Amino acid sequence: MAEPLKNLLHPGVVMDIADRIARDTNAFDREKFLRLAGDGLEALELMQRSLKIRDALVETLPQPFAEAAEILAACLPRDGVPGIDGWALLPVSQFVALRGLGDFDLSLSLLRALTPHFTGEFGIRVFIDHDQDRALATIRTWSGDANHHVRRLASEGTRPRLPWAMRLPKLIRDPKPILPILTALLDDPEDYVRRSVANSLNDIAKDHPDMVAAFVAEHIGDASPERRQLLRHASRTLLKQGHSAALSNFGFAAPSRIHAHLSLDRSEIVRGESLGLRLAISHQAKTSQKVMIDYAVHHRKANGSTSPKVFKWTSATLAPGGSIEIEKRHAIRPITTRRYYAGTHRIVILVNGQEAAEAGFELALE
Image 1 (cartoon, helix red, strand yellow):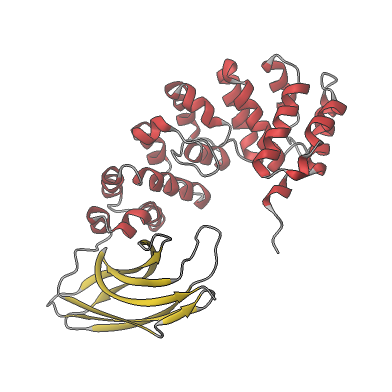
Image 2 (tube, one colour; image 1 turned 60 degrees about the vertical axis):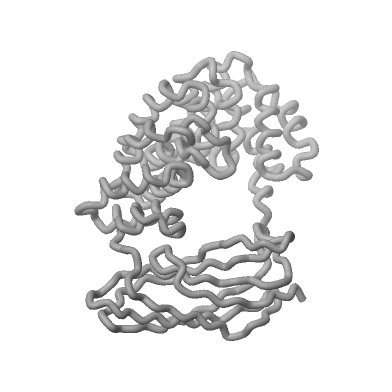
């Protein structure tokens, strides 16, 4: 069984933070910190643990933020000397977010300094929300930083809907201010950075689909394979939704004279088993057509209605008058993000975003 995420912040990490801060300053109450951070820590989940450690830092570091920031900066790894790093920097980042708004530029500088050793993406969002123009003016300069972790912070920290972090309502409403940052990083040499750019664009697509489709259209011409992969990943939500402009960006036109038939290897299934899908597609047009084939499982809900979840399948080029047959298995297994209900479910085939065939099955829970 995988180790629980909460154990990324454990009593040993608390001890390490205390020792490294106490090593560089006398203006820190080590024993009080250990008592405040450690009391009841193991009963908490990951983010609760981090906030508890953050609050202990608030109580034990010097009150002038500039003095506390100097101490924390000195505790970062440097010149081969170990320091506070990894998940231990999450509460440090949150400390900066809580205490540093009055020292805006110093706080951004500290978050930039710590991000190569973990990430400042959680802490930086408070500053963007507080004074977006001022924060983005600094963050835009990071897109050209020599350190790829800092460049990634420029894209990841500004994501409107970053998981686990506070949302940025202003950028959800109007993401145009971060588009220059994402544009500057489209051809970043690090895949780590490019994936962050794609995820940010995918965030934006959830609220501004036409904007992202237009952005992709603007930047896909003569794109390198790496940029094209980024733009495809950025469009994943739009492609699943069958957004016509997004599909067109990748050569998927509305299906023409295509006939599809879906069959299942059984009509009844028990939760935990897998279902076999077989799809036959024929193409009667006189020209070839590029197709993206997905399928939506319409899961039954408690009230008897259904809710679709789209899954990727494959892409193909259909020759004039040609046909293909493809197969796959779909597991109906318990996951933490979905609750299953017994009854009729449907599987709908999507060809270039349009429904082309369907079949039903009965689900039993045991």
